[in-house]
Length: 152
Image (cartoon, rainbow, N blue to C red; front, side, top):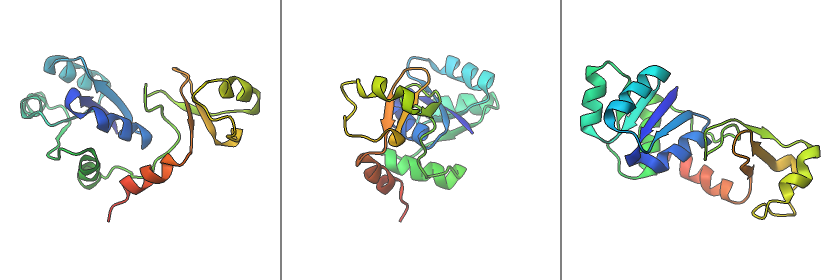
């Protein structure tokens, strides 16, 4: 599944990318352009905008109209409605949607020179975005991510 998320659901974009879903963010697009992009790229529109959902329905574009206001509830709603996977993966950049790769030892010094990367992280725990250069690691925040995604 590939998604196109409208500007009302910006927080959801990051979470879907962490779950390895190809997720485009229509932050600056109007409804007509969202419809065109979803059609061209075969994406499911995710929105809380009933007008956009009706336009998508008329054009026979796949969409899902979310009811929840909170991001965690939206994730659970998508899990229930579309059976999205709730296991986070280190595969997609949460910032730009590109692929990320496991860092090889040759890249270690370059990566650790970035000021926001802790110096004591083992290279086996680092990933790098192939497009924007964002560095990822499974730090303490991953426990919180997994807790957020746990369905009770």
